[in-house]
Image 1 (cartoon, rainbow, N blue to C red):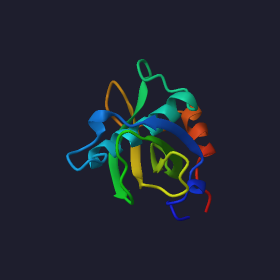
Image 2: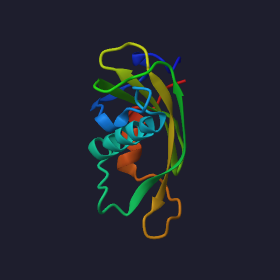
Image 3: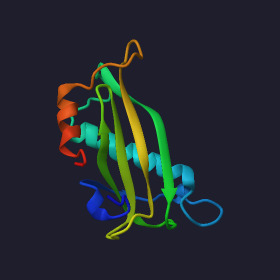
Image 4: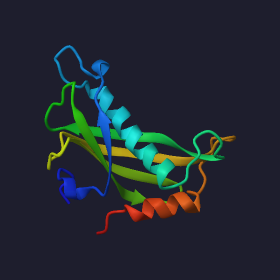
Amino acid sequence: MSDNQRTDYSYFIDITTRWMDNDIYGHVNNVVYYSYFDSVANQYLIEEGGLDIHTAEIVGFVVASNCQYKSPIGHPALIEAGLRVNRLGNSSVEYGIGIFKKGALNTSAMGTFTHVFVDRSTDKSVPIPSQIRSALEAILIKG
C-alpha cells in the first residue's frame, strides 16, 4: 500500500480551506493539516461509530501524530480527507489519513493519527467500545 493514492483510503469527507489556513508563503500552514486529521477521524467516529462527543463516558485522546507533505495547497481550495485504520488494538487505533486536492488521485499530505480510548472521568485507557470498534474494523486495511 502506497499511502499516496486515493484508493488507499475508504472514507472521505470534504473540507473547505479557510482564509486563516494560509501562512505567509501563501499555502496552508503545516500545523493546519493536523486539524484536518482531527476532523476526519472524529467525524467518522461520530457518524459511523456513534460517538457522542458531549456525553460519552469513553472518548479518544490523541497520543501521536505525524504528517508528510507532498504538494502545497492554498486558500481558497476544496480538499478531501481520506481515512483508514492502519492498526487496531484493544484500547488504541492508528488511522492513516490522506489529504487530497478535490478530485486528485494523489495526496498532497499524508500521515497518521493515534487515539487511545479513555474513561473520561479517570483519563485511564479502556477497551474501545464495541460500536466504535465495529466501525473501525470496517475501514481496517487488510494485509
